[in-house]
Image 1 (spheres, rainbow, N blue to C red):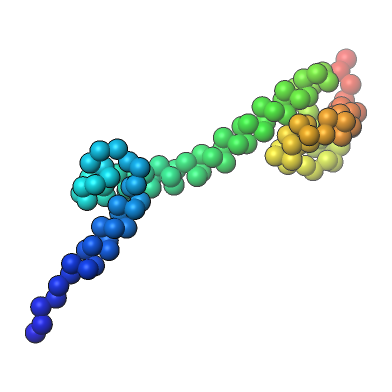
Image 2 (image 1 turned 30 degrees about the vertical axis):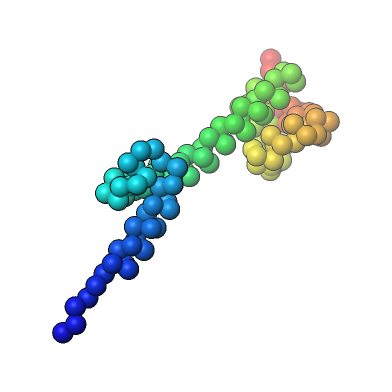
Length: 121
């Protein structure tokens, strides 16, 4: 039986790892054992943070909306309640963009949401 030489395969695998850890510091980028560990950890962080990114952006949109409705005498939760009661279905991302780019349109939306809320005694 012929002997199997695996240098080509190993080299290709190592190249893939080294390409992934390009930019890491010290032995994390040029020693295969440590580079592999570094790459695996980096991939774990990347997976986790793809989920967290969605969370962070939603929080940002909420903060922007809250800041935009304050001058109209509302807070975020009352504004969202008013939107629901008025039957206005706009997601938070679009709402924050409207608040920044189109202040007049946003004011009209706020007025509709305010009108849908019950008057406080």
